[in-house]
Image (tube, rainbow, N blue to C red):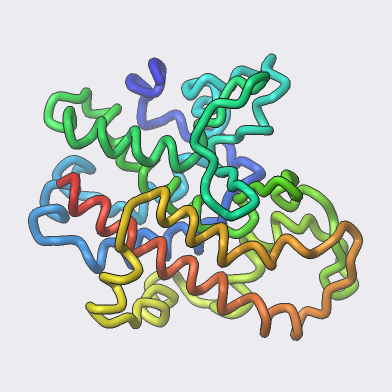
Length: 271
């Protein structure tokens, strides 16, 4: 992450094509998390972000994707870069997140790997990091926690596609991945991120403690298990909008809710 550590704040160039949840979803995750920050954590994060909210930086990892991929070692010449994409994670057949490096792969260092690494770096070095590196690290943490909860950002032994194929959404032909990025959540929540967060942030203190138990790899297992059924959809399958939304929109909302609570726990533990 060498160049990431000196990445200037004006290097937000293009929006990537694998943006889990889209801007509404990522902003909602960040807003829910912000609602549950301790006073100390919120004060410290606000200071590090020069008075700005983590919501503003929730889509940073997609906006800066061309630079980010290189910073993380995913060179354009590396043909396997999309097999182990840093915005996704891979689960075994029993839904446990894959932790090791496979022979023949450059990386199996996925979103969960980066969440743990960045969190550790911030815990140990936040006070001494260059300003741009500290901001980038916070932004990546916010984004990758959202990513790991998106059902089509999980790879399984039987489905490595992350939805990069087309289905029929009513009469419209759409990429299945894009359907989960944006349409699933936006179709049921046609409001701004603050209102969406207010409607999803409904759990009791006890429920939140259960949701946030464990750490990133435990959360990855929970996400993979909950999202497995989403991967039954086949290429060119015709989806009934109403029936599909009734079945799967609650899952999208639950995943965003969990991501927000878990992100808050992580940030509170760091700051």
